[in-house]
Image 1 (cartoon, rainbow, N blue to C red):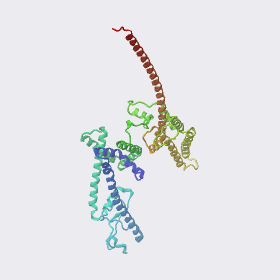
Image 2 (image 1 turned 180 degrees about the horizontal axis):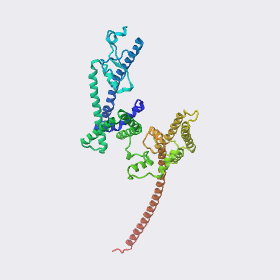
Image 3 (image 1 turned 60 degrees about the vertical axis):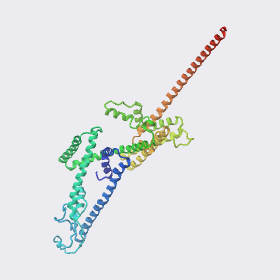
Image 4 (image 1 turned 120 degrees about the vertical axis):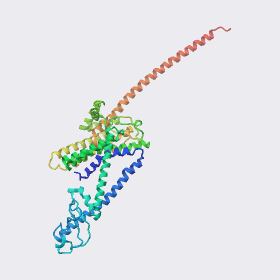
Length: 466
């Protein structure tokens, strides 16, 4: 499994939480440019140089070993004619190792009876999948007298690599276990020793196969984390825009009434928090299952709810844009129904192994992508109407990954807006009544004040003059 490219990615993705926390821990106070340069650019250049140099040397060595094997088969009817003797460096290499004598006077080749070549080729080994870890030492061994020295240097650097990796991993585990606070160094040593003990126990119990099984579990656990990394990329992009004041902060901008991580997912949080958090509203749970089993129904509710809202002019729209008509919304719902139904039906036909339906899975997923594009376009329209920050890619990924929650989110958004409008209109009517009452009280007070002034004037006129 570890030879597949996708699982090779998964192996590195499984390291992402540890590497991210470690880099964040040691990069405090650095600029983003420094972090990008020293954590991405420099390692990339080093890896590029390393793989180009030693990868090219390994390919060259394998080609030479293959050439010597073919030459021995062609000239001597023996593919192993140029195999190593016991005096050569690393005679039991990872793969078959070959060398060419300087002349046929060599005692091991005296029976050859024919001069072949005097080219001086250092011992080279063919690549073997059975012992890929030993192939590096075969590569070092081809450099004549420098081979043993280079192997010792390789062992030292390998030990340093594992020690530094273990120290970094222990630091991250220590930070997580201590809730981010700096702990005593003894605690980090404890985690490092625990990691070493686990490896020793696995090696003693099951040998290398147990470690390979653990690696497989790590790889499989790392692949789902890809979705979280994609969300983190979007979050980083938004954080940088907020930092540059190209986007308002969260408490200063309009947001979704139902976040994608809310609704039915609050049940999980309720369980993990042992009842400390609240349960989701019944309407959000109902809309989630409606979006799962009857997405066209929720799409229709979202479209008609959006059309019933007062027209606003989102950024990037024309001044004469009008709400969608019933016919337009009906066309969208029909297209949604066809694509979603095709996705399910074609998968059922493929799973049932119906004759001629073996290749329908590709068409099925194409239909699902079309369904996701329709949902994403509606979400984009709602987001533009309410001026919610986001992008078309976010809309598409939301529709692809959790379309039931996305549909529930859109319905909740337009439904809440209608509720706010009705509450606002009621408040405005109440305010208008209060203003009219206040005006009436003001007029009554003014009339009473005028009457009192008139009475005072009459009294002053009626008083005798002295």
